[in-house]
Image 1 (cartoon, rainbow, N blue to C red):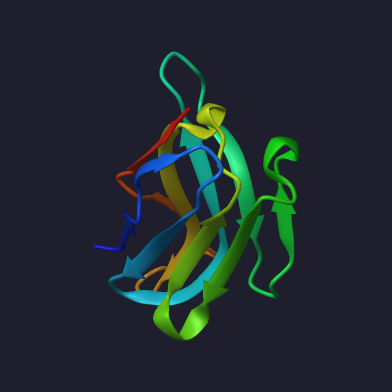
Image 2: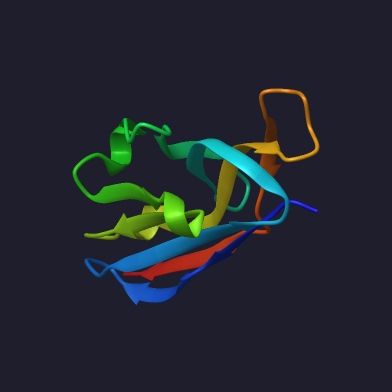
Length: 122
């Protein structure tokens, strides 16, 4: 019943910007870490950025200085601001979150969104 829904993907020219959103919904007791992954055609899914519940962030080297991950706990939402986009950023971007459901006695489970397509033209 807990689910993540991404939005904000689209087509953008190289050097442009996009902002992705990920909204968590359902019987949520607590959201722990959140993150963004991406998968390009023929490639493995890779970690892009993470943000802990205290706001601490980490980034994959290729996006450092260009992407910013943030979260709004009141809205159960994570964001990925992407600037200076490059064609190699083209991929399906997936939201990930470690969430403790209200019905669970465990610390948390991993949830994934359905993905949103980001295409950067040269």
